[in-house]
Length: 223
Ligand code: GRF
Image 1 (tube, helix red, strand yellow):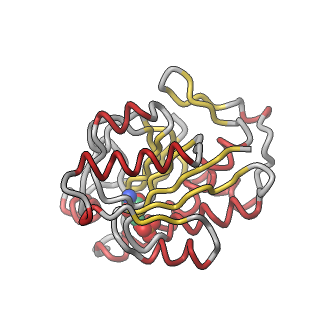
Image 2: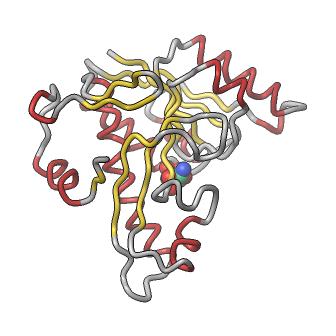
């Protein structure tokens, strides 16, 4: 059984997918906390689902350091094994990251190292990329910079706009992040020495359903 804290700041669509997969694997995954740095829809959803939810409001603290201290204390109190960032709009300090070394994971809507930061879809279109997508990565003290765990890709359509591309990448996100969580829960994915290590496909403990299998075979970059 793994204990998971999810940090959010906005609508929380990725968080909902993580909650759904935790529901399906209740004996393996417990969402012990959803926490945000401001009031947001994701917190409302978590409360409605009776998941422990806390707003550690940046506006209520004099400094980022104090807000982070409060956040870290809450996470330690619930004894989370993993901290999954799901649209958490704050840059974590080196101090915070070192408190949870190799246990913080983020999802970022680009094929890192390309397009760190915001407005990734607009920038990918402006750069006329032939491939775009999403990265799940370990978090270190630099923005969108830690080792990639897994990526999923798509090809932008000719003349596609940013809204369409964002929606299609979000569909990939909603498949990739739950797969990562299941893989952690079943020990198919372990983090060793700050690097992801995957159990060989034929030995994985979690059986892959057909839809996930198709996703893994067509969109995922196994590198
Ligand atoms: C997602 O695109 C995620 O990759 C990025 O922030 C967005 C959050 O969306 N880090 P949601 O709140 O999960 O709907």
